[in-house]
Image (cartoon, rainbow, N blue to C red; front, top):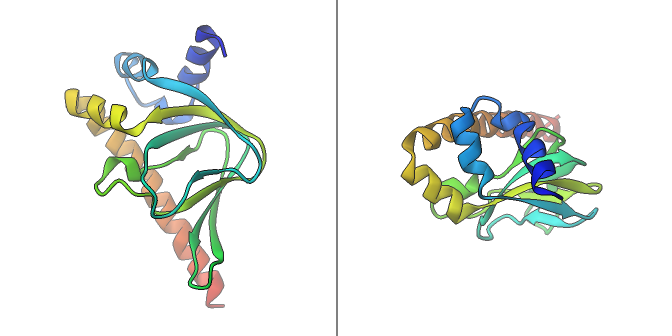
Length: 152
């Protein structure tokens, strides 16, 4: 992906719309493209959360481990969605599995770099935190719906 295409893809992602141009430019300096093949894990529950993903195409299944080695699906994410909030809070471990359902393309941040940017610019950190709380709220709602389906 060329630098110009990367910036265009970055600027158009729904998660970043509420950020100021200054904050988007700051974040653009640390973003990289990624691809995931069907079945590839972006995150595994309990492992270190070292990345934050912006999905541009394809779908990612979010799930949680069940006691006997299975995984309970929680939510399917697609273009405009994000994978990851575990990078923000200690102990920086993934809370869910995230697995590509089909070919996925998007943008990825190194979690340590992103935490450092938030520490250097508290206004940026505050805006990212507000955006991520919306993500967390959505995941909690999806878990609640999944739980209701299990007990029906």
